Length: 239
Image 1 (cartoon, rainbow, N blue to C red):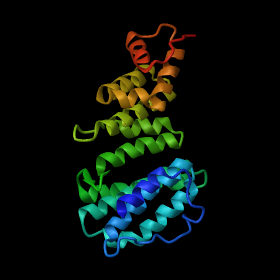
Image 2: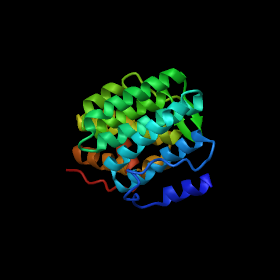
Image 3: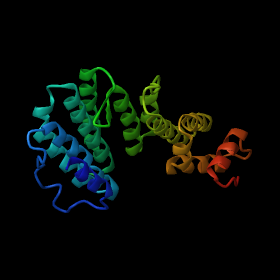
């Protein structure tokens, strides 16, 4: 039943109009941890539709309902921390909730420090590394590339992290560097993303957009950038 519910959520195109106001129903009987996980995953509906305000309301209600039941073990804490990361992302993208995004991240960081390591429960990756990655992404959502760059200083995703997740982080770093006109650093970050996960990087819209913008900024396009553009099948047209 849980798998069927999760599949239906991932296929959804828009949220149920009453979903954000509804209580978070425990359809798993005596397994509140699994129910909390399903609530966390249910937020995909709001991301797909861009209904960030409703999604923030839903995930906050889910957190309030389940948090007392999750604090006793590592997997429960990881779910609670993931809920805070979801809240941070939706708050950053919601015009009225943006001021709260860093508070959600601070709470997620506290939970990550309490666990003390990166974890993978129910396919949810949570821990200090994922919190740091979300900090960079949130700064970008808040249109603060300088803060995004500051947050990534001295940080490198560990080899144990799935390469697509690490690649996505370096794509975000490339975006931030380009926004402050650090062209070389932006290209370096893209190249690192491409080395880690070529297919993911070459098909990612943010990576493709960054490559296009970098090309337009160069009178003489570096060979490494030309090569990446060719692999992405991005047109090489300079100023």
